[in-house]
Amino acid sequence: TNMNVNEVVANVALEYMGHKKGEYEYCHPNDHVNLSQSTNDAYPTALRLALYERLFDLIESMQILKASFESKAKEFAHILKMGRTQLQDAVPMTLGQEFQTFAVMLGEDMQRVKEAQDLVREINLGGTAIGTGINSHPDYPKIVEKKLQEVTNRPFVTATDLIEATQDTGAYVQVSGVLKRVATKISKICNDLRLLSSGPRAGLNEINLPKMQPGSSIMPGKVNPVIPEVVNQVCFSVIGNDITITLASEAGQLQLNVFEPVIAYSLFNSIVRMKRACITLAQKCVDGITANEEVCRDFVFHSIGIVTALNPYIGYENSAKIAKEALQTGKSVYDLTLEHKLLSKEELDEIFKPQNMLNPHMREVKGHK
Image 1 (cartoon, rainbow, N blue to C red):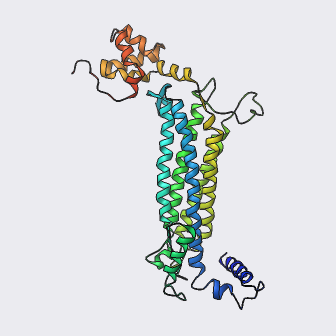
Image 2 (image 1 turned 45 degrees about the vertical axis):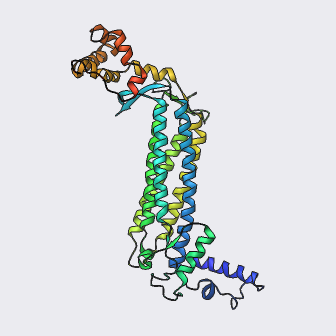
Image 3 (image 1 turned 30 degrees about the vertical axis):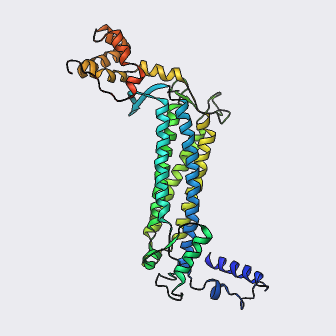
């Protein structure tokens, strides 16, 4: 790859100089273009320059997806729903809070990508074969560092120890690890979207995903969550690429890691796929999500989990008894609490106001001040 570039650069230079291609006595791919360089410092430097730029593309696409979730968080801010832990009813929240969480998760990972991006600013150009700088001019590393900064307008710097920089691929492992983190969390979000839209009659059915296919080949009217599913699969491939990059980095020997080509391929493959996945998820799924507000509210007020809100007022033991009876009889927690005369209707209505169930505040526990 490096020699192909050297030959192209040499021949373009010859044309600029008024010579024919191949007249290497005037500009030679090795003697002139490759002067003070080796494949072992030119190739990694090129990789880092490209990687640094591509990570900007990923951050931009993540911002698009984050903005989509933020928009839905505002749209759904008033919709009361049931929160769940271990797929069991927990305590109330809003659908807006659920979608805002997705946005926050993405925002945190954007910061991690930026931190990993900073690691690839360090280049080893001028180290030549193994980092000792043999056959290079003593001033070459600093001169080329300055020139690269001018050409790219990016803060690339020469490594302080070129021998270490020539053999170490830790920055790629770090970037890949962050990509795996992004993929893992986005895949989890897609799982949630599929769960929340499951049904429509025998599932949660709290949200509706945009219909992106005509239906099942055998089940008329069945529409599958194909956009979250395809993004899941992209995430699986990114996680797989991380294993490849880890093994390739570990397999380096002595003063050089010869497996940087597969590291480069895997990194760019992950970045490009993840970038496209973020945009696809935002534009073809999240932007078109609608909420089934009544379904969400019914789950809350028919849930056993809502009994948690009564703990400070009737105590844990009474709350547990109410929950057990509600499960056995099918009666609501609200009705059973009134039936056992544990609280008045006015007290229950006050406790079950959305603002009292969604925010932390001090409550007077029964029997205590």
